[in-house]
Length: 304
View 1 (cartoon, rainbow, N blue to C red):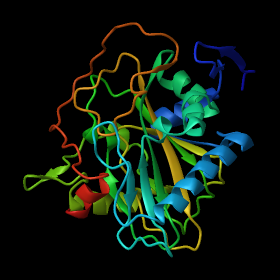
View 2 (cartoon, rainbow, N blue to C red):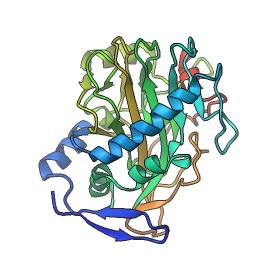
View 3 (cartoon, rainbow, N blue to C red):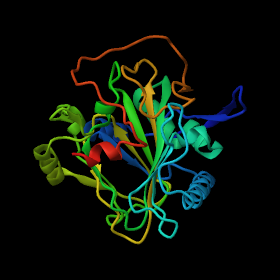
View 4 (cartoon, rainbow, N blue to C red):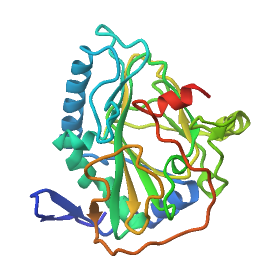
């Protein structure tokens, strides 16, 4: 990797600039498979700061019995899994953590993974959205097979989700499971019998399960994932948590075509390169998604 340099900007945050965060082999692997696992994507200090804030949120959740807090659109920020209690807290989603945590905001703006994103879809990159998805030990929540782009149509498909591992991710604690190459295949309907379920049809999911690969690794690893990649994750069947900070980015010329389901005050911030004001389109067809009425899309998938 080429040496990184840092420059100060108006709000005193530091942005890392690197020309070659990825080798050509890694670049080719990303475009062939639709995902890339990147080790040491976080510094030790970044990882510690992210976990420290999440530990505070877990502790705060023990005083709550239902989804709580508020995002920009008035929906709850903190989502609790059914069965959550003070004795067994099960905070499963924090929406737009960058809005309430300087640690999460700093990582969103400055990481080795973001340098890789800029190399893949840059040079001009905007922040799209962020969330924390957590599976506490024994958590029953699963994520059914879906494609992120079906939740968030844009004028083109140059969007990458970066999934930062805040815990060691193992085969037992509900790792991300991806279908290599599926980003180059069809976009599957996520509406079924007039209901937006946020998941693909049962026959598609069954076939996907036979082709999936788990993404595992130590805390501090990141998985870069194409917006059309078919993916899912199983419940956490272990005694260890599995928490991900997910920051999604888009090419600066990729314009949103639907309301943001994860609103943030930083939506559209240029985090690499510059603003050009240009719009680039690619041909595709899909049904308009439905914005969740509750705290997260977990409720939408629960009805499928």
